[in-house]
Length: 199
Image: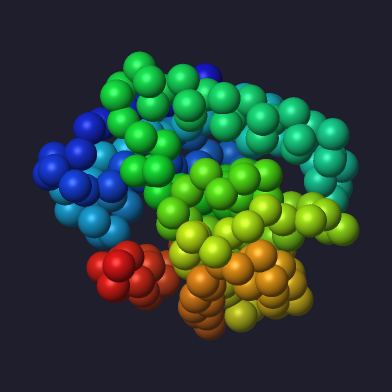
C-alpha cells in the first residue's frame, strides 16, 4: 500500500494512523499531527480502491451503502499491512491511534469491529460500517467521534447508532458535535486534541 511514515519526535508520543476520506491521499491528514499531538509520528495510508479515479479504502454500492464483501476483504488487508509495518518500522500496533475521516473513519471503525487493535481511535464523520454483528470486547478502548449536526452524508442517527454499538462493547466513547456539515473543522480537531491530552 502507498503510505508515508514518520517516527515520533518524542519518546512515548503516539503514532497516528491517518486514513483519508474519498478522493484523498496519504498526504491529506498529516498536517493534523502537530494540532493533535506535537511530537507524534504517523503512518498515513492511501486507499487502494478507485471510484471514478478517487481513492477509497473499500467499495460502495451507492452513497452510504457499503459493499460488505469488499469491506471485509479490505479491512483484513489493512490490518495485515499495519502489522507488517509495525515489524518493519519497529513499533507496537498498540502505539497507533487511528485518525480516520469519512471513508477512512469507516474502515477504522470496522477494524475495531474485528478486534481491539487500538487503545484509542479518532473517528471524524464515521458511519456504522456493519450492522447485526457482535463486536469484540472493547473495554480497553477509548473512541472519539467528531460529527456534524448538518452533515448531509452522515446523518445524526448513524453517529448515535455507532456510539451505542461501541458502548455496548464496553468502549469509552466521547461524541463532539459541530454545527457544520461533512467537512473537517478546527473546533472538532481542537476537541480531539483536548480529548487525547486527557489520557
